[in-house]
Amino acid sequence: MIDGLDIVRHAAARRMKLSVDPRSGRVRLVLPPRASLKAALDWAEAHRGWVERQRARLPEPWPIVPGMVVPFQGEDHELDWQEGHKRTPKIVDGRIEIGGPIDLLSSRLLRWLRTAAKEVLEADTRDLAAAHDIMIGTVSVGDPKARWGSCSSSGDIRYSWRLILAPAYVRKATVAHEVAHRIHMDHSRAFHRLAADLYGGDPSPARDWLRRHGARLYWFGRDD
Ligand SMILES: [Zn+2]
Image (cartoon, rainbow, N blue to C red):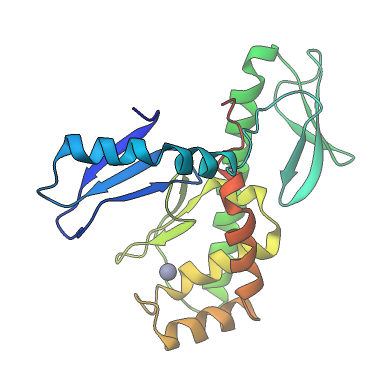
């Protein structure tokens, strides 16, 4: 059987379908409600070559190691780890200085990035909403697999913390998109007009950037 295979029965599925998630590397096998599991597994096995080719095209794991480049706000920062540095990361001359035991390097850096993401995204969101008299609820960050941001009907906005690894224009376009959902809870023309107004330009370059490079951000901090 193929490694990392998730089998999902889907009421609306007409036929079997295989896909490889570029964010997790997992393989998804979707089955119509009454398809035979055995037949489906045989069919997936027959497509093993295709699955392996898709996987070979996935982004590389991107482990956190001393000397690596961290794209903080989209700008390259060398990770300058020395045991004797202060434990809390600090940006010094375009480098991220971080100290403490090497085995805690990864978790400490990830925690710091997440905190920075929350601060920056919350400030961007509140500033934009206030400038346009739009009411918002709480702003938080998480690590969702499917979306860069979401906005609830009660006005709470949630982002992927990984946006802190993207260029500022990409982050700001995502913020404008979610704030625009406070007025239009759909993706209508009126919504897209407002999102472009709030962003102050055409957000398609930002969307293209996420389409091209977004999946790679999901591999940041992963060893395998
Ligand atoms: Zn949307």
